[in-house]
Image 1 (tube, helix red, strand yellow):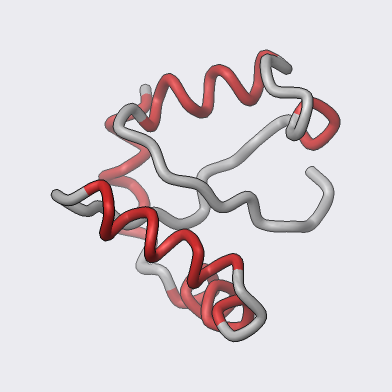
Image 2 (cartoon, rainbow, N blue to C red; image 1 turned 45 degrees about the horizontal axis):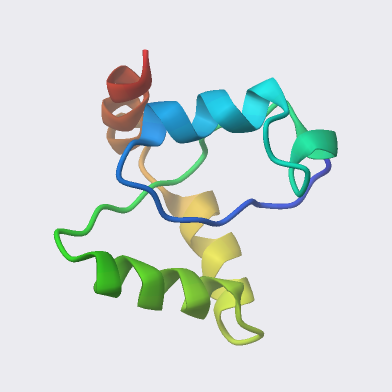
Length: 84
């Protein structure tokens, strides 16, 4: 891990993590292994994309860090169960 947070949206979290960890994407190949530290879910793809852009923005960056640091461990466990 390089100390930065990868931010992206997907309809299949398990597949997305597997692909990144396999080195499939050139953009993330050198940043593996990935560890899930925060997750949000949306019913609407357009809302997920808007949220991704916000979290990648200059304003959203500090928000992202704060969200990761305060994310409840019990909530994270729910998402981790989905990818196992």
